[in-house]
Structures are given as structure tokens and as C-alpha cells.
Length: 316
Image (cartoon, rainbow, N blue to C red; front, side, top):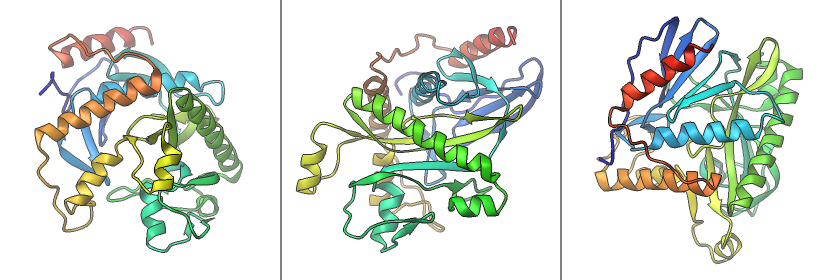
């Protein structure tokens, strides 16, 4: 492997009051006020954790999320406080709304799979006939999903979100407005780097009764990007779009008979493909931010993280 990967962490920080192991993040609660989110090199697809670790993936996710949280804080306040380590984000502990707000500008991924199955309504949004895979929608659409306790997240309409009491009506109206503004900002920033923000997800919550943006934003795990150059030509000729996202991993799995469905087994993933995934993540970071990705020189990554986090916690 190219460098030490982070499969999991088992820290015991001062003032630690909780720990949750997410799909790719290890989350430590401090004083019931702060969250230390350590982004590992685990990777999941179709809500299934794959049995491999991708070098530098965690660093790419943490640094990309921090970059966009800082670039969008004028639109909506967010949970970020500091990023003391390449793999770590520290922020406020918020009361989360258990909904993923998915914004789609193009017909692809899950939306395309539903459309191809002749469904013409997604999360209460009517879809016109005659669209092709990767076509641009006239306007971005919002297709939320619930956070499932186990298994796959489930599509849900905004009307049902409010009816089921998952988000109050006034807050949900603001959530949709913020989501579209964030998507517009992300699209604008991507375009400057020669990319198209295809779709993405946002998570929101409350901090002291204020609506805030939480978790990651515009990362390769939460978003899909196409290369802008040649998009129109590829659409006209029916070619696959050249993209930077985790979708190519999903497609690789689908080609080998795995889509996270009951009874399916994750295929063996060769190390060469793992390295390709790593390269794609690094490539997306550099394309998207315009910054050079700096691979860490420290050989003991876990020790580095522990020292950096402890130092940051002394200031909180």
C-alpha cells in the first residue's frame, strides 16, 4: 500500500463523553459540546462497507469538506470549528435532522436507475419523459432520503418529511432554500475548475435553536462531478461522461453483480483497483480546490492524529 491507511481508531481523549463508529468516520464526543470527526480510509458503496482501505481517502474527504464549509459559511452557519489534522474535523455537536437533502442537477446515478425502471416521479418530483442518462434538468431538483438505522436509506418527499414530523415545516422551507443556494455555490466553484457538480447531499441540524449545515459538503463521497470540457459532445454521441466521483466504484461493483442487495456478496477487490480509487480521490481534490494534495510525511498516522487532536482540545 502507498503509505499507512487508517482502518479504525480507538482513542480515549480527555473529557471524552461518547464515541460512534460511522461508515467511514470515527466520531468522538467531547464534553457533550463538541465532535471530533476522524475520517478514516474506509469506503462504502450501496450502504455496505467494502473490505478494503483506500490510501489518502480520509485526508481527501476531511480537507475537501473543510474547504467547502469555509467557502459557504456566508450562506448558512455550519458546525466547523477547526481542522487540526489532515484527517480530522472538530466542530460543534448539533441536534441533527435525520434526513439527507439530495440536490440533483443531472439525471444520473440512483435517479437514472429509477428513471430507467420507468419511474417518472422521484421523492414527489415529477420527471419528464424523453430524458437520457446524464441529461441536465431544467432546474436542480431536491430528492431527500431518510437515514435508515440499517440497510439502505429510503427516498422520501418533502411533503412526507413535514407530515411525519421529521423537520418542522418552517425549517424545511429554509432547508430547501439553503440546499439550492449551496448547490449553486458549489456549481459555480466547480465550473471555475473545469468541473460540473452533478448532484450532492447536505445534512442540517440545530445549534442553540439556529439552523446549521452539518457533516461533509461537496466531497467525492457526498457528490458527483463531471468534467465540463466535452460534456455536450459526449451527450450528443451517447458516450459515458468522464467523471470524478465514487460512482465509478459503484459501476465496477454493479458490473460484477453487486448492488448491496440481499444475498449478494462483495466481489474480491484487487489492490490495483484500490490504488485507482486512491488516485481518483486525490485527482478530484486537486481539480476541485486548485490546490496541490500534500501526502503526509508522518509514518505513525494515529500518533500524529492523537497529538494534534489533544493540542486542539486544549483550546476549547
